Amino acid sequence: MYNILVVEDTAVVRKILAKLIGANPFFRCVMCKDLAAAKEALNQGTTFLAAVVDLNLPDAPNGEVVSEVLGHKVPVVVLTGNFDESLRSRLLDRGVLDYITKDNRYAYGQVEKLLDRLRKNLETKVLVVDDSKMCLNIVTNLLHKAHFKVLRAADGLEALGVLESNPDIKLVISDHHMPNMDGCTLVKTLRQKSEYQNLVFIGVSAEGDGLLSAKFIKSGANDFLKKPFYHEEFYWRVFSSLESVEMLEMIKQQANLDPLTGMFNRRYLFDKGETLFKTRESYEGFEVCIFDIDEFKQVNDTHGHLIGDQLLVQFSSIFKNHFGDDLVGRYGGEEFVVISTKDKISLHCDVLNFMNEVRTTLFTEKRMAVTCSVGICVDACDTLDHTLEAADAYLYRAKGAGRNRIEPLNSEVA
Ligand SMILES: Nc1nc2c(ncn2[C@@H]2O[C@H](COP(=O)(O)OP(=O)(O)OP(=O)(O)O)[C@@H](O)[C@H]2O)c(=O)[nH]1
Image (tube, rainbow, N blue to C red):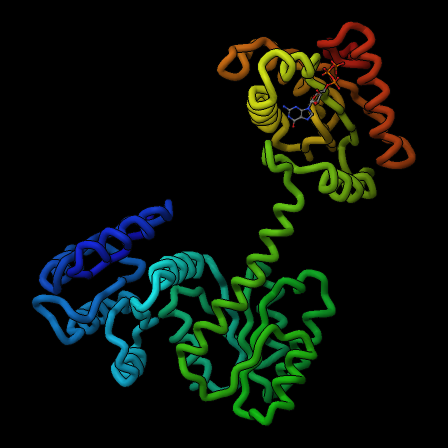
């Protein structure tokens, strides 16, 4: 949980901010009506992720709260009705992270979005690459103020080494003219490797005739900044590049998940399953199981589709608990798949334990008893598809033999 300090004298604005910021499960708001209350909150030793402050307070009408909060090294977001451009630029120069005016209803959403960005930054590693110590320090300082974790390198070659030993770096901010390897060569080299396709890369340079920015972008950079840059532009370019890549990652992740149960879907099972299949020699085993809930149609017909959905969610949650070490997913309707690389006896025991839990569980608010049937193929066929087909044939046999059983049953664990 991260604390957010809100210093605002208008009750209705406090209420809006409390609702918006409070809706974020990571945030706890500390509300102050004036500078005196803010001082008290800051001096209590509480750590704040950021502060959202109004400039015109009853006991501090000229933005005095900004110095107070900055003095405690807490990032400041000004939310004000004051549209004075020179005041805005003076405050930004003093290190205020952003100056947001209350001129439309989106302003409040913008504040919440910025706070959430700061929270995500705590876990975001950035590599700054520059041969000038002074430039490295300026950029590092800006990034630290926005809560990023910062690593540094003096040229492109050194950057490659830092990236190799820190695969969780999300963003590179790189100068162009450097000894050993320049910025454009660095980004070109990175984009040739599959592991760096999602890395955000921002080129920076004092050379700004347009040719270099084009060269950077053509080499694979996401954006370009001309030195010297204004820190507001720096932050928003960094934030928006990160957000685009995060959005793409989220879409990719969603594309792999079944929306009802949150389990991996068929597409992902095939993709990941193929990788396991190709490398199966290196594991203790390679088995495929297909589980199918017995007479599930009757559940829908008797209690309706929503109860059927509830049952699937509950079933999949038990399923995930029992096969946490394996590749598992929803194969279709009421069918679930396990692709396992452990030895066949261990897998068989897991299957039996799972089926026993299903048999003894009462499902949904209707407290229904449920069983399932399983087909297991313990010896990989020539392809993954054929292995799945073999497991499916066993499942068919289990259904035909009366359901609520494993086919074939391993005599060593039966
Ligand atoms: N509620 C709900 N039902 C689904 C979903 N996907 C598939 N189904 C239903 O699952 C039922 C599967 O029925 P059948 O294939 O006849 O199988 P069954 O009734 O389980 O019978 P056996 O497999 O032979 O034991 C169908 O009625 C589908 O409409 C879903 O996401 N939610």
